[in-house]
Length: 211
Length: 219
Image 1 (tube, rainbow over the protein chains, first blue to last red):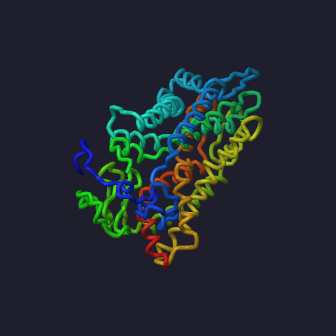
Image 2 (cartoon, one colour):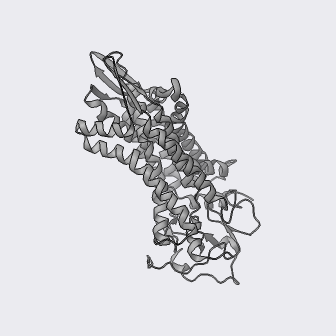
Image 3 (tube, chains in turn orange, green):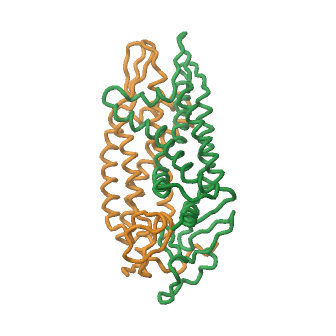
């Protein structure tokens, strides 16, 4: 591979007055609406990209709050009902002694969502202003965010499985709480937010070519 | 392809557009040479994989997608997990899991669950078979193959079978203290499904598929 410290000078499709397809890479004439190879909609740059990113990110943030405040699980055991939130579930797991699983849930439900909010916000801000992280690092960050987002769904699935499995009438039964819905929404919104981000903007920012 | 694209082309002497390829991630222009099977072409600027043709990739994708479909059917209908407690046995299948949210305020999640674990993966597998099968046999692409493949790619992040499997593992540990758990045949079908899906995605090179579709399409 080449030297990764300094990005080699490259000509982008936009700088050459052309449009590159983000689906299949086909290069086309400036005026083209749809890709000749794959018929995807063509945009040299998605001008509304950042707006969409912020809008979805904010929506994700808003529903993430009730996801943490309201109960995820409602356990009734021998007549007693107890609610547990996301964080409460992690604490319970630690008390049970299953540290590994507690870590998985902690990562999937708390670390990944919070990290994603920060990372997407950082990436979106970095388009407009100077930041210390290099283009290449930011691109890697973007790929990580895109890859990792779906794994946050783990906790929603866990709740669904527990709720079907533990239905022992009086002895113990588990019902899903309302937080499961808002958490699932939060994950979906931030996934859409990450997908709306146009990674080409990362590279344009340093080039500064409004060609 | 990328190795001989070190010198950026001059604005004035751009070749025919079909000989160029723009990195789908960062828009850098490259000369589009044929990538030998088994090799990987990366972008010179952002190092994203542009093309990675693999031997018999199309045939393998079809076979793996077909296997995944069959496993999915098994996973839906056989019991998934069994819980033994207080002299009772509680069986749950994938269908029950999907229906877990169907009462009360959480009802909308039922649809989302069904989509994420069952419906979207099935749509993705079928559309991949639909797109790849004519190509593996050397025929011309099926009607609307382009739209089908675009849909399959768009669904990729939303088909969450493998996330679900990790969820099952977490749930097992949570319940383990409460009651005795047994794993049903559907669980293993689902694990196999995840392995098959990951294998399949490894053979997939989006740009290669698009190029093949274009070549086979009579204009």
